[in-house]
Image (cartoon, rainbow, N blue to C red; front, top):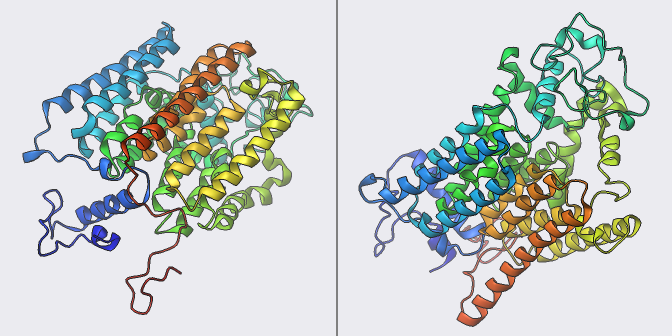
Length: 513
């Protein structure tokens, strides 16, 4: 059977039509069928093992109900432990591993609908609480409100008295609109200011925003539909909906793997509760990967937009080597243009100061694995060399492996090199791990939680991240050994060339343009 035969939804004379998607079933089901067909031939390894088992008669099996209920219960327990500070990191670790085992053991018969519905229910516990893991969402609310007022969050700090009319008791419990903060303009050395101020829930209220333009546009849209009194709830709902939408996108590729994202306690905690904007970056990255082979320009624009949500996705450019990387960079740059015209170089916001505070400039508190052996100056050089080597490797392997797999290990390796202590940075990695079928990479964001709780203990942090790296390396070794001993090979998959297959066109037989 040729690839064209596999992708053709029309039943051949000797081929029984699909029971799930019969002919004439309507444009929506045909669209879903096309997405599934594309994904099974282009996005990841093990395409044959990715096919879901249909449910006879449309009745949800009891096993799916039990497994889904267990996942929701684990989300409730994880959020509850985080609220009450009952060993939250340990509970999260156990909960995430438990979800993975449930999906691995009982997930083969899951349907798209079950996975998406359970994912939605897993988001509900987080919506009932104020953000737990960070106060970033309050900055999101403020930035959106500032933009709706006609000002730029790159040109003003939250404590600036010129923006006093925008204050409310939710964001500024200790500072009313009639009170003066004594702050005007942008401080000369914002990196030296304290991170918190007791008068407001916004972190770093004495510095301008650090978030790129697409993130700021997202904050503005959500602020447009959120009453001031609702605080962060609008953003929490938006993040939960994005997480659910991403679950659906993954589930039409493979429901079983999609549950690793949609049912993950990490996603419940960082999307529906903390409302971290990284969930939007995860959606854009995943959509870029899913559309890369057939719509390379669209994929490039989506990747550029993801980079304008959080800068880290730009590291995936080598994986898109033949998928218009210049288009991605242009889309990223274009998102900054309106802000550059409005505020000039202030568009950088607090980003340089943030990188200095977080130890990215001198390596003083980053690259925790390298810190086990190297001083700060040396580890910065080694980290840069490793990053360049990974980019070159991704560029080289782009023709040999599915783009989902390339993006997964490239993103995960970048986190292991930089070792940021903020766990929500790993949300895109969880989505990529689900898309590529590489669950071992979820160990990386899990390690970030334990390292986050060990902040200030450099050796402990390094050992935690090193453990995650060993888990990933061990899983990779075991997988290769299993394939070698069994004599199995992965099914043939198109490489990351990003070229359109036009061999079906007259005059183009056997030619790829």
